[in-house]
Length: 93
View 1: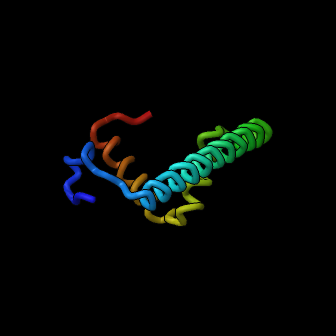
View 2: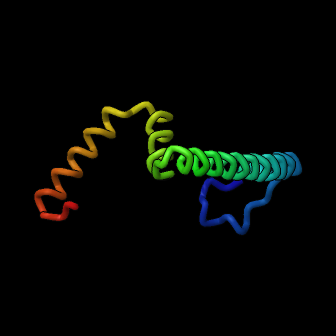
């Protein structure tokens, strides 16, 4: 197999490589479908809880993402900088 990506149309794969590629593509498609289904379920749950608690769904989504990344301090600093920039240019609410 060539290391030069520009020659992709001339690359010949062995039968073993074809099997591996086929398996990867099929498993990847399955995983992406599962992720899509899980995201849809999460979005429905977020929407329902947001309505129940009278909170914007986007706020709940952001809270989940921040909690997932566990970088609240960094995110808070980013927001403080963002707020400072907006105040500086006079673009605040």
